[in-house]
Length: 198
Image 1 (cartoon, rainbow, N blue to C red):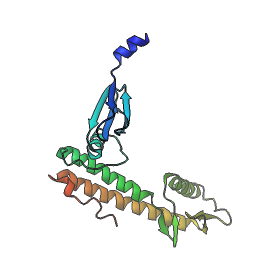
Image 2: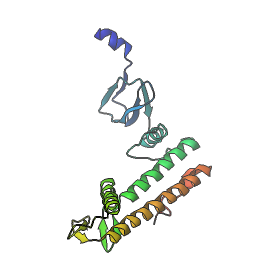
Image 3: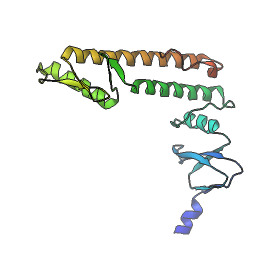
Image 4: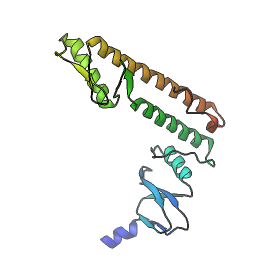
């Protein structure tokens, strides 16, 4: 039984390549199983249904992005097609937007977290207070990124939420504009994806 399984399974091997070699492993449906590289002193054996090899990190990154993956890096392979370049660049724009949105926000002279949990806590608190008309507890405050409790009333909480909302709106609009510029360009790599974020 094991021998039959081995015969049916296609093995892909990168064995002590002459230089660093990049790869993407895919299942039979084209879903990404893994990716990485093999150095000259290494060997990789993969039973993946599909296996792709690339000479450079940029080529692998471009292919990963085109496959719908989210590589840790997203360089543009200059030999890629215009469509692949556009896909990679739009993924880069999304990454920049995510990074910007995760940065703390300045409000009332303090820096506050804006990760998903912090925003959920803020919106949950505001929703509860506005729905029940319950007063805020005595000594209520909101914590800064460096653990300072800043006393706030409901209007100030709403102001913090509004500041976050405004920043989200700005960053999404910038990302949409950049991706539109990428889509209409014949040379998408000339679009400055770091412009306009402030």
